[in-house]
Length: 271
Image (cartoon, rainbow, N blue to C red):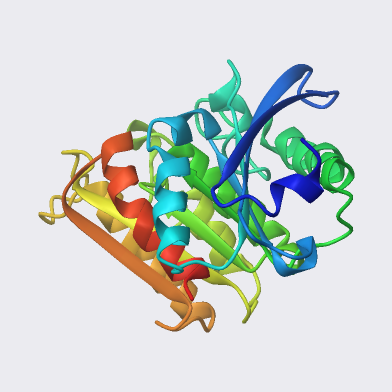
Protein backbone atom coordinates (compact mmCIF):
# COMPACT_ATOMS: atom_id res chain seq x y z
CA UNK A 1 0.00 0.00 0.00
CA UNK A 2 1.63 3.31 -1.00
CA UNK A 3 2.18 5.96 1.66
CA UNK A 4 -0.15 8.33 -0.23
CA UNK A 5 -3.03 5.94 0.46
CA UNK A 6 -2.04 5.13 4.05
CA UNK A 7 -1.81 8.67 5.38
CA UNK A 8 -5.42 9.37 4.44
CA UNK A 9 -6.70 6.26 6.24
CA UNK A 10 -9.08 6.76 9.16
CA UNK A 11 -7.45 4.11 11.38
CA UNK A 12 -3.95 2.86 12.12
CA UNK A 13 -2.52 0.63 9.41
CA UNK A 14 -0.08 -2.09 10.52
CA UNK A 15 2.51 -3.36 8.05
CA UNK A 16 5.08 -6.05 8.81
CA UNK A 17 8.53 -6.05 7.26
CA UNK A 18 11.73 -8.03 7.68
CA UNK A 19 15.27 -6.80 7.27
CA UNK A 20 18.52 -8.69 7.58
CA UNK A 21 21.02 -7.29 10.06
CA UNK A 22 24.69 -7.84 9.28
CA UNK A 23 25.54 -6.73 12.83
CA UNK A 24 23.17 -9.15 14.54
CA UNK A 25 23.54 -11.84 11.87
CA UNK A 26 19.82 -12.50 11.80
CA UNK A 27 16.60 -11.39 10.23
CA UNK A 28 14.74 -8.77 12.26
CA UNK A 29 10.95 -8.57 12.03
CA UNK A 30 9.33 -5.18 12.57
CA UNK A 31 5.68 -4.15 12.83
CA UNK A 32 5.03 -0.64 11.54
CA UNK A 33 2.04 1.17 13.07
CA UNK A 34 1.18 3.96 10.64
CA UNK A 35 -1.01 6.77 12.02
CA UNK A 36 -4.08 8.04 10.16
CA UNK A 37 -4.63 11.49 8.74
CA UNK A 38 -1.23 13.12 8.50
CA UNK A 39 0.10 15.46 5.83
CA UNK A 40 3.86 14.95 5.76
CA UNK A 41 6.17 12.70 7.76
CA UNK A 42 7.98 15.79 9.05
CA UNK A 43 4.81 16.29 11.15
CA UNK A 44 5.01 12.73 12.56
CA UNK A 45 6.98 11.54 15.62
CA UNK A 46 8.85 8.25 15.44
CA UNK A 47 8.57 5.78 18.34
CA UNK A 48 10.80 2.70 18.38
CA UNK A 49 9.80 -0.11 20.77
CA UNK A 50 11.86 -3.13 21.83
CA UNK A 51 10.10 -6.49 22.18
CA UNK A 52 7.73 -5.43 19.41
CA UNK A 53 6.19 -8.90 19.38
CA UNK A 54 4.44 -7.97 22.64
CA UNK A 55 2.67 -4.96 21.10
CA UNK A 56 0.24 -7.33 19.41
CA UNK A 57 -0.82 -8.62 22.84
CA UNK A 58 -1.34 -5.14 24.30
CA UNK A 59 -3.01 -4.61 21.66
CA UNK A 60 -1.31 -1.40 20.53
CA UNK A 61 -3.26 -0.94 17.30
CA UNK A 62 -6.53 -0.83 19.22
CA UNK A 63 -5.14 1.59 21.82
CA UNK A 64 -3.85 3.90 19.09
CA UNK A 65 -7.19 3.83 17.28
CA UNK A 66 -9.14 4.70 20.43
CA UNK A 67 -6.89 7.69 21.15
CA UNK A 68 -6.94 8.93 17.55
CA UNK A 69 -10.74 8.55 17.39
CA UNK A 70 -11.02 10.88 20.41
CA UNK A 71 -8.47 13.27 18.87
CA UNK A 72 -6.22 12.82 21.91
CA UNK A 73 -3.00 12.08 20.06
CA UNK A 74 -0.76 13.77 17.50
CA UNK A 75 0.52 11.44 14.72
CA UNK A 76 3.04 8.82 15.88
CA UNK A 77 4.73 6.31 13.60
CA UNK A 78 5.55 3.34 15.84
CA UNK A 79 8.05 0.62 14.97
CA UNK A 80 7.79 -2.57 17.03
CA UNK A 81 11.14 -4.39 16.83
CA UNK A 82 10.84 -8.13 17.44
CA UNK A 83 13.51 -9.61 19.70
CA UNK A 84 15.69 -12.50 18.59
CA UNK A 85 16.76 -15.73 20.23
CA UNK A 86 19.75 -13.92 21.78
CA UNK A 87 17.63 -11.26 23.45
CA UNK A 88 19.64 -11.35 26.69
CA UNK A 89 22.82 -10.70 24.70
CA UNK A 90 21.46 -7.99 22.38
CA UNK A 91 19.65 -6.04 25.10
CA UNK A 92 21.54 -4.49 28.00
CA UNK A 93 24.01 -1.61 28.19
CA UNK A 94 26.57 -1.24 25.42
CA UNK A 95 29.58 -0.22 27.53
CA UNK A 96 29.65 -3.38 29.64
CA UNK A 97 28.19 -6.85 29.87
CA UNK A 98 26.63 -7.79 33.19
CA UNK A 99 28.27 -10.08 35.74
CA UNK A 100 27.12 -13.17 33.82
CA UNK A 101 28.31 -11.87 30.47
CA UNK A 102 24.81 -10.97 29.28
CA UNK A 103 24.38 -7.91 27.09
CA UNK A 104 27.66 -8.53 25.25
CA UNK A 105 25.95 -7.80 21.91
CA UNK A 106 24.27 -4.56 23.06
CA UNK A 107 26.84 -2.50 21.18
CA UNK A 108 25.98 -4.38 18.00
CA UNK A 109 22.30 -3.73 18.68
CA UNK A 110 23.05 0.01 18.88
CA UNK A 111 24.74 -0.25 15.47
CA UNK A 112 21.74 -2.14 14.09
CA UNK A 113 19.41 0.66 15.19
CA UNK A 114 21.44 3.50 13.71
CA UNK A 115 23.17 1.93 10.71
CA UNK A 116 20.46 -0.46 9.55
CA UNK A 117 17.00 0.12 11.04
CA UNK A 118 16.74 3.92 10.85
CA UNK A 119 18.07 4.04 7.25
CA UNK A 120 15.59 1.27 6.37
CA UNK A 121 12.71 3.29 7.85
CA UNK A 122 13.78 6.47 6.05
CA UNK A 123 14.04 4.60 2.75
CA UNK A 124 10.77 2.71 3.30
CA UNK A 125 8.85 5.95 3.87
CA UNK A 126 11.01 8.28 1.76
CA UNK A 127 11.36 10.32 4.96
CA UNK A 128 14.59 12.26 5.55
CA UNK A 129 13.48 13.23 9.06
CA UNK A 130 10.72 13.06 11.68
CA UNK A 131 9.31 15.62 14.09
CA UNK A 132 11.08 13.83 16.96
CA UNK A 133 12.27 10.35 17.89
CA UNK A 134 11.60 8.29 21.01
CA UNK A 135 12.46 4.79 22.22
CA UNK A 136 10.61 2.52 24.65
CA UNK A 137 10.78 -1.01 25.96
CA UNK A 138 9.65 -3.53 28.55
CA UNK A 139 11.83 -5.12 31.23
CA UNK A 140 15.28 -5.75 29.71
CA UNK A 141 14.02 -4.07 26.54
CA UNK A 142 13.36 -0.96 28.65
CA UNK A 143 16.95 -0.96 29.90
CA UNK A 144 18.12 -1.26 26.30
CA UNK A 145 15.91 1.64 25.19
CA UNK A 146 17.25 3.85 27.98
CA UNK A 147 20.84 2.93 27.17
CA UNK A 148 20.36 3.77 23.49
CA UNK A 149 18.68 7.11 24.21
CA UNK A 150 21.20 8.09 26.89
CA UNK A 151 24.14 7.40 24.60
CA UNK A 152 22.57 9.05 21.55
CA UNK A 153 20.77 11.93 23.24
CA UNK A 154 21.07 14.22 20.22
CA UNK A 155 18.90 11.77 18.27
CA UNK A 156 16.04 11.41 20.76
CA UNK A 157 13.57 13.46 22.77
CA UNK A 158 11.84 10.84 24.95
CA UNK A 159 12.30 7.39 26.43
CA UNK A 160 9.74 5.01 27.96
CA UNK A 161 10.83 2.35 30.45
CA UNK A 162 8.22 -0.18 31.55
CA UNK A 163 9.38 -2.33 34.51
CA UNK A 164 12.95 -1.69 33.38
CA UNK A 165 15.73 -4.10 34.34
CA UNK A 166 17.58 -1.34 36.15
CA UNK A 167 19.13 -3.90 38.49
CA UNK A 168 21.53 -4.88 35.66
CA UNK A 169 24.81 -5.10 37.52
CA UNK A 170 28.49 -5.86 37.03
CA UNK A 171 28.95 -7.88 40.25
CA UNK A 172 26.88 -10.62 41.85
CA UNK A 173 25.57 -10.24 45.38
CA UNK A 174 28.02 -12.96 46.45
CA UNK A 175 31.00 -11.17 44.91
CA UNK A 176 30.98 -7.84 46.74
CA UNK A 177 28.06 -6.11 45.01
CA UNK A 178 27.68 -2.45 45.98
CA UNK A 179 24.41 -0.59 45.33
CA UNK A 180 26.20 2.67 44.57
CA UNK A 181 28.87 1.44 42.18
CA UNK A 182 27.68 -1.75 40.49
CA UNK A 183 24.34 -0.98 38.82
CA UNK A 184 25.45 -0.36 35.26
CA UNK A 185 22.79 2.12 34.15
CA UNK A 186 22.94 4.18 37.33
CA UNK A 187 26.71 4.39 37.03
CA UNK A 188 26.41 5.53 33.43
CA UNK A 189 23.95 8.29 34.36
CA UNK A 190 26.19 9.52 37.19
CA UNK A 191 29.16 9.70 34.82
CA UNK A 192 27.15 11.20 31.96
CA UNK A 193 26.06 14.68 30.94
CA UNK A 194 22.86 16.69 31.12
CA UNK A 195 20.62 16.78 28.06
CA UNK A 196 17.85 19.24 28.97
CA UNK A 197 15.54 18.23 26.11
CA UNK A 198 15.26 14.60 27.21
CA UNK A 199 12.09 13.36 28.92
CA UNK A 200 11.72 10.11 30.82
CA UNK A 201 8.63 7.92 31.42
CA UNK A 202 9.34 5.40 34.18
CA UNK A 203 6.74 2.76 35.05
CA UNK A 204 6.88 0.17 37.82
CA UNK A 205 4.44 -2.38 39.15
CA UNK A 206 4.16 -2.69 42.92
CA UNK A 207 4.03 -6.47 42.32
CA UNK A 208 6.86 -6.55 39.74
CA UNK A 209 8.78 -8.89 42.02
CA UNK A 210 9.20 -9.85 45.69
CA UNK A 211 12.98 -9.38 46.02
CA UNK A 212 14.13 -6.76 48.53
CA UNK A 213 17.91 -6.97 48.71
CA UNK A 214 18.40 -4.13 51.24
CA UNK A 215 15.42 -5.19 53.40
CA UNK A 216 13.87 -1.70 53.39
CA UNK A 217 10.35 -2.92 52.65
CA UNK A 218 10.46 -1.72 49.04
CA UNK A 219 10.89 -4.20 46.18
CA UNK A 220 14.09 -3.85 44.19
CA UNK A 221 12.48 -2.79 40.90
CA UNK A 222 10.87 0.21 42.62
CA UNK A 223 14.07 1.00 44.56
CA UNK A 224 16.15 0.83 41.37
CA UNK A 225 13.74 3.13 39.55
CA UNK A 226 13.60 5.67 42.39
CA UNK A 227 17.40 5.60 42.62
CA UNK A 228 17.61 6.25 38.87
CA UNK A 229 15.37 9.27 39.34
CA UNK A 230 17.69 10.52 42.10
CA UNK A 231 20.66 10.10 39.75
CA UNK A 232 18.86 11.96 36.97
CA UNK A 233 17.90 14.81 39.29
CA UNK A 234 21.50 15.06 40.46
CA UNK A 235 22.41 15.76 36.83
CA UNK A 236 19.85 18.57 36.64
CA UNK A 237 16.65 16.87 35.54
CA UNK A 238 13.46 17.91 37.33
CA UNK A 239 9.92 16.59 37.74
CA UNK A 240 9.13 18.35 34.46
CA UNK A 241 11.52 15.91 32.74
CA UNK A 242 10.44 12.75 34.58
CA UNK A 243 7.04 11.05 34.68
CA UNK A 244 6.86 8.23 37.24
CA UNK A 245 3.97 5.77 37.22
CA UNK A 246 3.62 3.18 39.98
CA UNK A 247 0.85 0.69 39.20
CA UNK A 248 -0.30 -0.55 42.61
CA UNK A 249 -1.59 -3.93 41.39
CA UNK A 250 0.90 -4.07 38.51
CA UNK A 251 2.95 -7.16 37.82
CA UNK A 252 5.91 -7.85 35.56
CA UNK A 253 3.73 -8.77 32.62
CA UNK A 254 2.22 -7.58 29.35
CA UNK A 255 -1.21 -6.97 30.93
CA UNK A 256 0.28 -4.38 33.31
CA UNK A 257 2.24 -2.68 30.55
CA UNK A 258 -0.88 -2.62 28.40
CA UNK A 259 -2.73 -0.78 31.19
CA UNK A 260 0.09 1.76 31.38
CA UNK A 261 0.40 2.26 27.62
CA UNK A 262 -2.38 4.85 27.27
CA UNK A 263 -0.78 7.05 29.92
CA UNK A 264 2.58 6.72 28.19
CA UNK A 265 1.16 7.66 24.78
CA UNK A 266 -0.79 10.63 26.13
CA UNK A 267 2.22 11.75 28.19
CA UNK A 268 4.43 11.72 25.13
CA UNK A 269 2.15 12.76 22.29
CA UNK A 270 -1.14 13.95 23.74
CA UNK A 271 -2.88 16.93 22.22
